[in-house]
Length: 101
Image 1 (cartoon, one colour):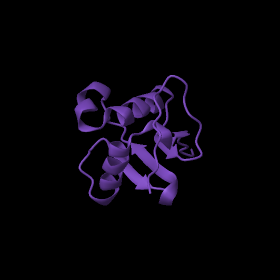
Image 2 (cartoon, one colour):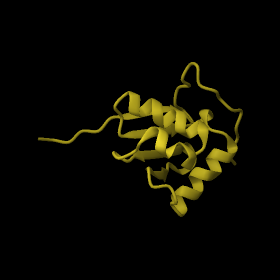
Image 3 (spheres, rainbow, N blue to C red):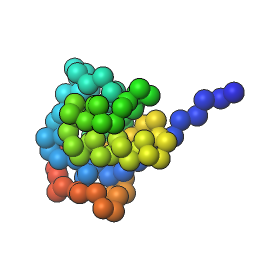
């Protein structure tokens, strides 16, 4: 049987400048054991959400804006979360006026 994973793609405007920098650091030197982050060049990030992720237990390990998006991905049974500059904003989730140059 084929293993097929789901991905939730949302706008990268949902993360703050600080969270963007935190994710960049996670790509270079991971310290978080609940997800694996990959850069999409200048377009955003792809996060692999570890299957053993426990929402409440791990909340303090990651920025709140990223936590909310991971929670949304898990609620939709997704294994990956894609933060993309061309992704659609999610109604009801805060956005930031960011330029990540």
